Structures are given as C-alpha cells and as structure tokens.
Image 1 (cartoon, rainbow, N blue to C red):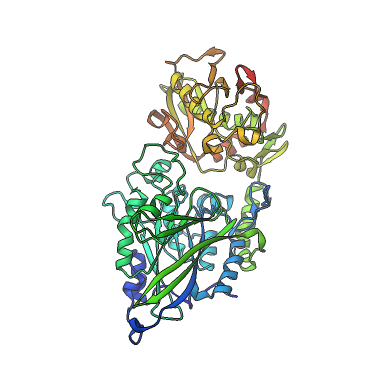
Image 2 (cartoon, rainbow, N blue to C red):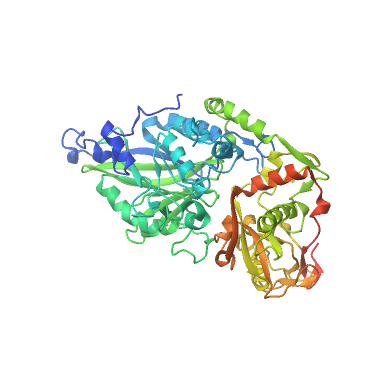
Length: 604
C-alpha cells in the first residue's frame, strides 16, 4: 500500500486554498461549499465513521535504534520506538478504515532528542546553503501527515532551524498561541481545516487547532525573547474555536503540546498553566477531541465533560518516541444539511506489535549510517567504568563528572574578572538512567548519552543561604521515610511526581539529606572546603539554561545575577573537556560529598 494518500483527502480543495492553509484559514472557506446536490435537508439520517490518528513527543525517533548505546532500542517493558514502526500501524489503519476516512496529526516535540536530529541541526544543519532534508521532515512527509503542533523543544535550536524545518514540511506546522512579539499576530498557522469525502452528504470538514506550551518563554528564553510570545492555551483556544466553526468546521480536534492536568514546572512565573489539556476540554465549547502531548504519558482515553455545553470531550496521549499511536474514532451523522458528532472514543496501538516499515527505513538509511559513524568517534579513555544506575540515591562519579566539567568551564570563563575569586559550584541531574562511561575507549555517544538535552551553560551568583534553599527544594524529590522503615528504591525517589531531571545535586559543597525530616528541613551539615557554609557568602553556580530560566521552579536562581553564559551545548563542552584531558580519571573529581541519612544514620 503506498504511503501517499492525497488522492483520498481534500488537502486544499483548490490551488487558492493553499494560501488559506498558510494563513491558518479554513480550507473549506477557500473551496466551493455547494457540492451537495439536491435538497440535503430532506435526506434521512446517515451515520459515517472516520479516524484521526495521532503521535506526539517523537523526539527524533525514526528507527528502533538507540544512538547512545549504538544498538536496537529496548527497555524493561520491551517497548519499541520510532516512526518506522508507527508507519506500519498507520498503513494498517488506512487499509482498514479507507484512506479517505483517516487523518494523521502530531502534538509536537519533533526535532530534538536523538543524535540523528542533533546532527542535522548542528553538525550538518538544515540552515546551510545547500541544506540536507531533515530526516523527520522526510519521513513525516512520506507518511502524509495532515498537520502538526509546535512543541517546546522545537525551539531548542533557535528559530532559524525551526523555520528551515517548517519550510521542508508538506503540511502545516500549527501554533495558535505562538505569536510575533512585536504585533502579537500569529507566527505560525493557528489551524487548518481538512475535508473528508464520506459516502453521504457534503464533505466532512475537520478542523485541527494547534497549541503549544507557554513555558517556551522560560525554557528557551534566549532563543525567543523579543521575537515570540506564548499566551495561554485555554485563552487562545477560546479565540480560535469559534473562528473555525464559522469557517465551516464540523468537527474540531486540538493537537495540544500540553499535559492533561499535571502540576506546572515553572510555578507562578507565568499566568498560564503548563499542562492545560483538561482545562481546555472543560472550558472551551465546541472541542470534540484533544490529542495531548508534552507529559510523556500513555493515556488511551480520558473523558471530560465541557462545563458550558455538557458535551463529552475525548482526550488521548500516545506514549512518547513513537511507542504508541493514538486513534480517535468518530461516528458522525448527516442531518438537515450538516454533520454532527454522534460518538467519539479513543484507543492506542502499540508499535512493538509490528515490524518497521521498509519504505521509511530505506528513506533515511544513508542519514542513519552517517550519524552512527559520527557518534562512534573515539574522544578519549576512562580509567574505570562510570555508571549512573545509582545516581538518584547516591553521590556517584558520573554525575560529579558533569559538575566538574561545568565548574571548570565557568572558572575558566571568569578568570581575571571581578568574580574570579568566588567559589564555583555546579548543579547536575541524572538525565538518563542508562548512561554509562565505559572503561577504556570513550566515544562521543558515551558523553552524549550522559547529557541528553541541548542545554547551554550559565553562571549565576547566589549566597550560601540561597544555595541551601536550592538544595532543600531539590530534596523534595525523596519520599519521607522514618528511621527503621524499610527502603523501597521504587518509591524512595520521584516523590510528588518530580522527574529525575528536576533533582539536582550540587558539586563543590558537602551535605546530608535527612529524608526522615519534612520537605524544607532536610539539608544538614552544608559545608564548603571543610567549613560550614556562611549564609552570606557568595558563590557562583554553574547552571544549565533550563534551570537558570526557571525550569523546575527552583528558588532564587532565575532572579540571580547572571555573570556569564555560553551558546554552545553543555554536551559539547563535555566532549571538548574529555578530548583535552585525554583520560577521564574519577580520582580527579569523584568522592562522596552528599548522602541520604535518617536522623544522622546513612540510608546506604
């Protein structure tokens, strides 16, 4: 079965409608509306079905491959990843439902997350004079996506890379709440309306609204400040859903890069919540379904009642990285000249139940092999294996390595300046639970697998009291556990749904975390250079831009004085550090400087 199905779905209805898509207007508005014939109001009710398929948080996964381990992807649940697997599921759904009864959309975070996509953003960028085809654009075009919403990670490489990616797409990249800063006009098409030609009545018009995360203004401040603003999801949906209805949309599906209703990671820094998909379904009249993104969770179906209309809205989120495909199944009825939704439900399909699609695998084979060669470059050696396996509970050398690299970079940058005499500390988090630096040869992929995000490095000045507050906030990651209670590693960390990347250790100081105490009273014996930390003493904290801009809502750091910043990724700083040293020796930076205790007794 061919991938392309454009003969079955009216994508633009006419050449003129292409301009409507580009401006976020209705395709139906650009096309003749009277292709019905006869008096349709006299027709008997006639039910039809169609399916909207959805992906989200693909994060550069195309093949079922892990570029950090240079092996087929696998996890404890034996999930598979990648668009090549999703392609097989999509083809199967189109064959079963009929190509004219399906749409395919995405809810964002597409171009960041693997060394494959990093390579075409930084090493052989798609912004060059003779740009290569971005592998995600090539595959999504081949799969004939109908629309995709912007994710927050789309902005990690800067707006020029995002615009270059957008130009390569053969479908609209939607962002109703991504606005130009100067005039607050849409920077991307807010929505598109697709036509499905069913067996009865006029074509069914499905409106797809794209919404992204307001947190972009914080997390990628350096890339978007002064250029774009990102108002609230619910507020912008209330603005555009009526416009879509007026433009002829019979059914409205929202692709929202926003979790269901999880707590925000940026606190009260913005007036709009991070995870607003449930609020959207409850508060915006006229929405039929929401494809949820951003949270990296599997939600086969969640039903929410709209507070204004009393109608049920169906929400679904497929597991990230192409592990699942969501399917919204609609029944519609044509009556009195218009289509109405009779029922809507959702389900998820598991990509580990099918083989990779050969056409997709072949399409990016050359790019895949190029990136495999790139990540397997030898950059140095290591005297002993360093593993991250216990990093959530213990001070391990592999996390100290991140701290040491960051501290060295900041110390060198501040040398000779007014802040050169201040002690330099560094934060680091366990980003990747499977990271290992092997004994012997160290390859580029080993360092990249330790620091998997495109974060850059900054230096902020904090006092000793503020460093203690910072650590107290970080220590909320641990479940409270009284002395003598059994220790369950599965529940000890990640309290209050805190993700691993929001648990920071601070390199350069020593301290205990007393998990028998309540949150806010856990940091004990905080010391620097063998002496208790003076609350008034000043320190320079080497910190990634996500944290510095308020990501995770850690106290003080976002408001602290910035004394230096770097535009290169921390990952590249690490690679350069290893190349310069030649040999990684844990004796140079490792050592237990923090530990978990209960009433002074070590947990481990």
